[in-house]
Amino acid sequence: MLSGVFSPLGILASLLVLGALVLATLFQLKRRQRAAWEAFAKAHGLSIAERRMEVQGRYQGRPLLLATGKRGASNKKRHTVTVLRLDLEGALPADLLLEHERPEDKLPGAATPREETIGDAELDAAFQVEGLAPEARPIILEPGVRQRLLGLKGHRRVSIKGGWLQVEQRGVPASAAALEALIRAPNDLARAVSEAAPALPATNAVEASPHAEAARMDEELPGSEHA
Image (cartoon, rainbow, N blue to C red; front, side):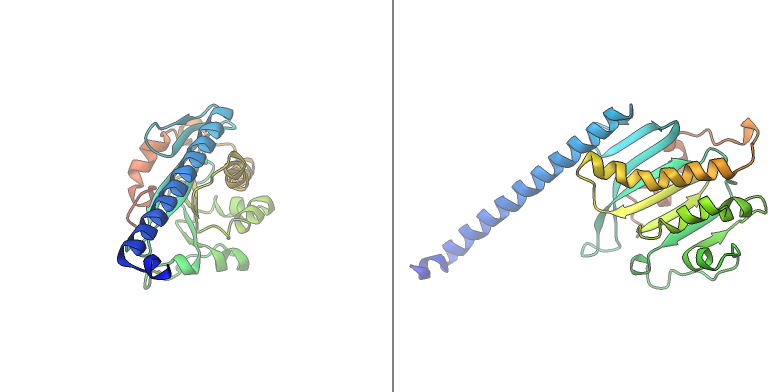
């Protein structure tokens, strides 16, 4: 009886059943993810793309883009990530680059020499900074902003670039509660930055839509080939 199980036909049948179970599981997961994103978008008056996992609009008054993409330089290392982008609406200079990446996610040899520092030991240990204008330093060092920045270190990537806050994590949330949890801390940081910034003329505010800004920063888009 066991010989039949381990025969070529028996092995093939077992592999087909296993493959069908894996596909069914993945299909159910995709359905749960899609349903969760649709529920999240509906709850906050956001729009969701028909053929991809992408939500955009104004979340609590702030422009938001939430999408999925692939990261990794090879097929073995490629994985799905969820990327959240929040518009800081001119609270920090567009030339500022503040970036954190977990050591295990960095490409070999990708590190760049540190030329600028914030002036805070913990922040300097966690973030690379470029284009730090004098008016940006006190905003970053404001206790509420500093604390929330350090609180995001667990994410795969965190950056402030071109006037946008971008946070990236591995995987795709499969519940509305998980999406709310993903956005909560970055949104608190964006609010703290806006509150710490001095009043800016309306002409300084970032007015580009999430997609227009994303096109200019193509290397950071969800789905980019960059690791």
